[in-house]
Structure formats: C-alpha cells, structure tokens
Image (cartoon, rainbow, N blue to C red; front, side, top):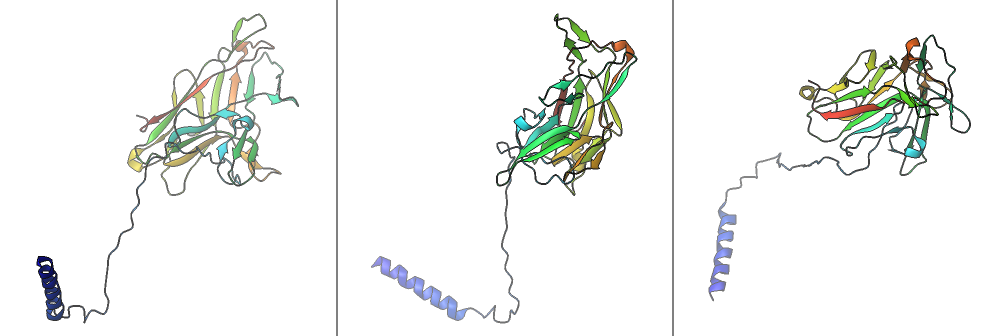
Length: 274
C-alpha cells in the first residue's frame, strides 16, 4: 500500500508540473544545444617504426628492410628514435657486391661517399627500393611532449689491420658532412641545423636542434647530405662529388689492402642543445 501511495504522488506531481508550467519554449524559433567531441593521445611507444622516403618523388613511408638497406636505426622506440641513418661507403661495388679498391695517391686524396640504398616494406603494396640516393639521417618525435630534442655526432679515426694484424691509422683524415637539406612535416617549426659543412671528430658536434619554445621538430625530420638530380628513375638521386667527403692528407700514408673504418656515433637527446 505504501508503494502505491508513492507512485500516485509521483503521477500527481508530474501532472501538476506539466499543466502549470509556463510555455517557456513556445516563442523560441532558434533552439540551441551543446555537445562535445573529445580525443586523447598517448606516445606511440610500441608501434612500427615508419621511415619516410628521403627523396622527392619517393612515395609513401614504410618499414625498413635491413637486408635491402645500408644503415642502422637507433635503440629508442617508435615514438622517439633515430629512425634510420646511412652508412657512408666510399668504394664502388663489383658484381659480387665487394668493394672495388681505390687507386692510391700519395700526394693526398679527396673522396666523396657513394649514394646509399634504402628498401621500405609496405603492408598493401610492393616494396619500394631506392638506390644511389643521398646519405641521410631521419629522426622521429611522436612523444607529444613538445620538449624539443637535439642530435649530435662524433667520428673515430679511420683505422684498419693489414694481413699481419698490424693496426694502421689514416692520421689527419677528416670526414665532413656537406650541403645539408632538411625536411619535415608542413606547418611545424623546423629544427636549427649547421649551414654548409660540418667536420666530424672525436668531440660530438651538434647536427640539428629542435627548440621547445617553438614547438619545433615534431613528427619525422630528415637531413640528407648532397645535391640531387632527376634521372631515369621516379625519384631524385645523388649528384657525384657532393654530400659526404673524406679528405686524406699525404701524411696519412694509407696502406694498400687495409680495410679502413671509422665508427660514427649519433645521439638523439631530449631537449634542445644548450
């Protein structure tokens, strides 16, 4: 019986409110309402690392195929990493993929690195293969922190061992990066970078730096080295005699048959360079 009483009161109250309320909406000819559209993001820490083609006419980005590419990626994750950086090769290759030795000149030599190779895998299309393109480094920042970043690079001496295991060093040899070209997402402030030439050595040098105050450097940013030209392929390739240079003075006295190598260390750090 108590339940019935509450129900009856509810009916009476509703009926009274309906009948007694003024017609507040009767004169409103343009009703308004508000709704919301919401979205929330997180850093893409565990996604696939996509590399964008570093050349004009390169098409869509994809996942690097290490077997068909010459370089390495960093040990970060998909949201903040050195997505790819080229190895620098100064020798031509023969049909077996072996280095063709360069004829010595004891008076000193100036060598230019050959173009690099990059193969990108796509989910719904055939692989994209790029040959003889400018050597490059690509950085990705998809953290959503807007804190900026910087890239530094250092290079060890060129050393190698002869057939008797005797170490030989190219004393005074200088590796340099030239004619940098920087590209990234449209509408985002670009990182600052060196102008024309950067000589590498044991001390780390700043390659590029994204300013947090400008919210610079978000997304994928590529720095390639050297000039490009349009050839018979769909994308532009490296112009010989541009890009990455190795100056070898006479005093270096390179030995024939020694495979010299320098190790480059590229470091991507949170926050712009100080």
